[in-house]
Image 1 (tube, rainbow, N blue to C red):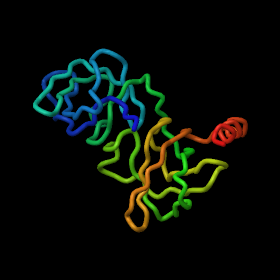
Image 2: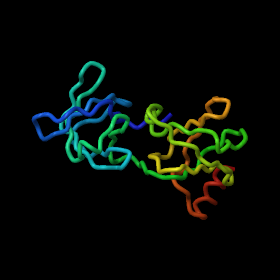
Image 3: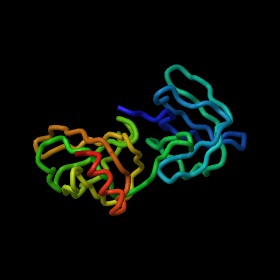
Length: 181
């Protein structure tokens, strides 16, 4: 499974004496280095990490570039170089089983624990050539290679890999279907 390195926010600290915002995070896939360009998702708001201090198993970050009120537990800070987009639609690799029902709940995303606090919601599924197409009720951050878990009515999880975030054009769809054969 492809996992984007970064930080998942556990807690936003109350206003301190300095101008920088302090947050308590857990590291995902090794975390990030301070100084480069980063973004907070969801929302893709630019963030600058000024310092990273390990505090037991957690990390204390001092950041700037984003309002404290925009940050929340469960959000992530990742490098702006990753090809992450927020979209309502995606093409997934099928798992050879019947198309999931609309009553099945989707969760997952950029890493296994990105969506820990909330569910994405019910998606609508249909076959799109060699792939499974999904439409979400609201935009969700994803990238090629991300894994989505779909919980069926029987609560058995099914994992799908994102091939294409968004919907490809007719030409791109034709090329993808030819490659899949």
